[in-house]
Length: 351
Image (cartoon, rainbow, N blue to C red; front, side):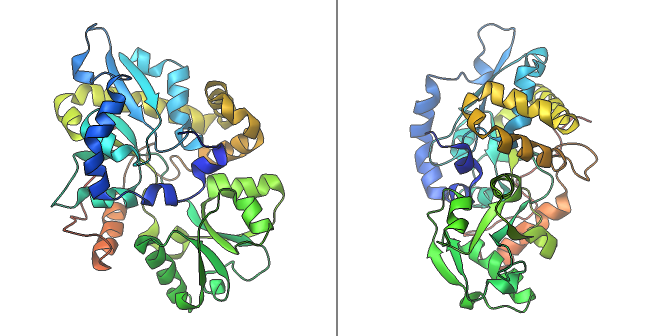
C-alpha cells in the first residue's frame, strides 16, 4: 500500500477506521502476511541481536523521523537490536502488534480505545508519546469566519461520519455558542487539503497542523485554524503513540527498554537539529524528496512538539490520558467497558 506524503498525514479517516471486530478477524491473515518478512523477537537464531519489527501507521512521514534517525545513526544496532520497519495493511498496526508479528508500532489514543474494552481487549500498550500534545484542529480559508468553532455554522465540513469526530466538533461548537446541526456535512474524499480549500469543494477540514497546516503555508494558501486542545483540555490526548505487544513487554522487558532508549535518542536528535533530521528522513525515504520543502517545514514544527513541555520525550501524562478516555465513556462513544486508566505505561521509557 503506497500513498503520497500528503496522504500520509492527511486525516483521521485512516486511523479512526479501526473497528475492533475487523482487527480481531484480521489477526490471522495479517500474521501470515508478515511471517515471511520478520522474525519473532524471541526466536533469534544468531544470539547476537534481537530482531524487532516496527509497524508504521501509514507511509513514512515526519511523525516517524526519530525512528529513521535512530536507524541511520546506528542507535538500535548499538543496543543489540535488528529493527525492521514495515508499512501497515488497511487495518493499521494494532492487529499486527497484538498478534506478536510486530513487537512495536504506531497507533493513536482515540483509535486504541475499541481495542482496550474489557470484553475483547487486544494485548497492546502505549509505551511512548510520539508527540506530546494533540496538534489537530480545523483548517479553513482565511477571512470566512471559521477561525473559531461557532463559525462553522452555515459552512461545509468534510466528514468521515464517525461518532468521536462529530462529538468532538459538536462539543467545541456548543461551548462557543454554536450549533453543530447548522453545519453542512459532506462525505470526505479529501486527499489534498490545499486543492480542496482552494477549489471551494469544502470549507473546513480536520487536519494535523504539522503536515497539512504546513502544506497550506508552503503552497501560499491563507488559512484560519483552531486547535481542539486549545479550546478544551479534554481533547489534548495523545496522537500518535508507540504501542507494544504485551507479551513481548512481559517476556523481554530489557529489550523493550533498550528499544525505547534508542528511539528516544533518535527523537532527541530530531528535536536538536530538525533540518539534519529532515535530510536523514528524505535520504532513507526517497519518495519524500518531491516534497522536500514541506518535509523541512513540518520537521521544524514538530521539533518543538515531540517533547514540548514534558520532562523528556515519550512521557505520557496519566491525567490527560484518563481524561480523554473518561470523556469517551461519559459520552457513550465506546462499546463495552473501558477503564480510563488502561492502555498505557511509562515503565519502559529511559529514566
